[in-house]
Length: 301
Length: 177
Ligand SMILES: Cc1cc2nc3c(=O)[nH]c(=O)nc-3n(C[C@H](O)[C@H](O)[C@H](O)COP(=O)(O)OP(=O)(O)OC[C@H]3O[C@@H](n4cnc5c(N)ncnc54)[C@H](O)[C@@H]3O)c2cc1C
Ligand code: FES
Ligand code: FES
Image (cartoon, rainbow over all chains, first blue to last red; front, side, top):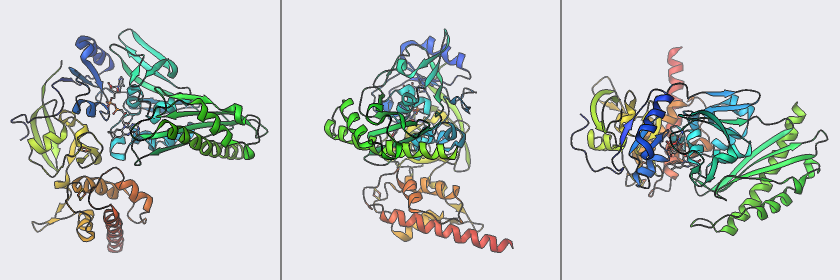
């Protein structure tokens, strides 16, 4: 038998509810007030409980809420429900077909065992600037759907992320899904990061989208970075490569431009200068790959 | 509407269990303190080391990163449940367990349960007739930390076990002819 003597455990005491609908979840969140927190995959929240960096009075577990586990890929983009685990998004060929960055970035999120449980929407709600999916939401110009007792609304990424682990959503709210717009025509993407161990949070990472014009010249080049700022940052690098033929474009120059645009902090693992160097290198590398992919997609079309 | 204790029913290593658990128990607490299944080792208790990995409905999961109460209605396999009983009252180890023994893939053994559950699930899920690649092996072991072995023998064990499973599958195909 389980049970018996409750042995010392790490999380501080809390109470637990596992509502069966979004409305019921909002009711519990409202009734329990400030101390209540949504529990999705728990892969960020439970470590915080065990380290006692968070001590919510109530956990509102949304894992039994029906209808939140869908991936819908359409011509406009991909909608990912709040209970879609990283592993399922990684495996979705439909999602990758509409927006290839989803698979490319998800492959870099944590280790397989953590991807089996952690959710993509949870990582966005967690708003960690070292997270891959916050950067991808920003780079693709995505949004989230937020349910509150007052109704449902769509919040664009720029209005959603306010700071590290801080979003514009306050009070009782459940993020129902995240929407990632489709990759435009004549475009290619790439994603790369440097981590101390594959699957760990990146020391620095970059995701990019390159779009070509009908003459195979660079029309636009944009990049989003992780672990370099307080919120996901998107930088337009078109000034360095715009109008250049894709096969001879000055990707290294775009890397240098990006190096000057970011303002990272140093920490135990990397100085600010080293992070700037990584930004330059990863930018040049990923832009070249994305440009080649855009060309290949144009030729295939 | 909210509880500090919950009655749950779970299947652990094939055995149905009913219990009342404090909601703040992690699955690792329930396994070790509640059931005495101390094969599941707890190192970092925040998801990094992988030593506490168990299978939830067959999927590798950190037992330090889920609450026991969330396991209601689910099936859990710990390292104690990886072996199968033969029909003579004995136990047959999983090929990865055999391979760990043959390849000296453990020293102190602290990390071993997490490696075994993770690798066993990964090997069971793949097509055994296809030769395992170095990349696959890296992905299988990459989420777990070992402070003793330097990983070389753990990776060797993965390749050994995969080869043994390929031979076994080939024999099954032969036998079915
Ligand atoms: C060892 C380790 C390595 C990791 N490496 C990476 C990595 O490299 N990159 C990365 O991006 N992540 C990484 N993670 C974190 C992982 O991706 C988490 O899955 C993710 O950050 C949070 O998702 P979750 O579903 O687990 O959310 P939870 O842990 O359940 O919740 C996190 C926070 O978001 C809130 N929340 C979650 N879902 C909702 C919702 N639907 N509505 C409202 N609020 C919500 C919770 O209240 C909580 O505050 C790692 C985790 C570990 C343990
Ligand atoms: S104890 Fe769970 S991952 Fe380290
Ligand atoms: S054998 Fe000692 S930690 Fe792996």
